[in-house]
View 1: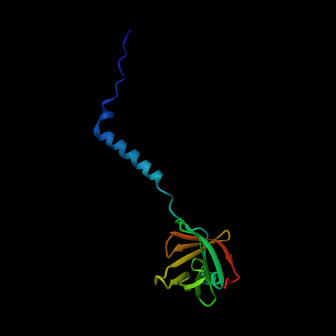
View 2 (view 1 turned 30 degrees about the vertical axis):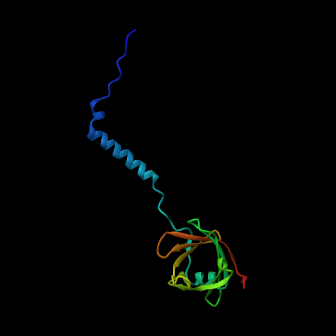
Length: 146
């Protein structure tokens, strides 16, 4: 029985310089394909009047995109803000500033503002001036809870 010699790989295959270049190339490709797509704003941005119309005397129900529990807030025509998580107690005030929906919470003193877009009957709330989606409405009611 004749013994076959194993196939010899070319010397360049083991050359550290070429091997590292190939490894870097493969890792770069893997990294590029693993990156999430650039975030984009969904829908058309609402004007200041449209944001005011949305919030004026409405109850909004929604979900956070980071997995926190669903939310429900009533934005009274008087500018008061009521929260379902606090048995519909007043928790702050809402306003529209530079076309953004802003909420001042009494408990924290924070005043987060959001760019609001509309797409397929859902409102999308983005961190001010960015494409970072924070929350999406699931329902909007015009009848006050109070």
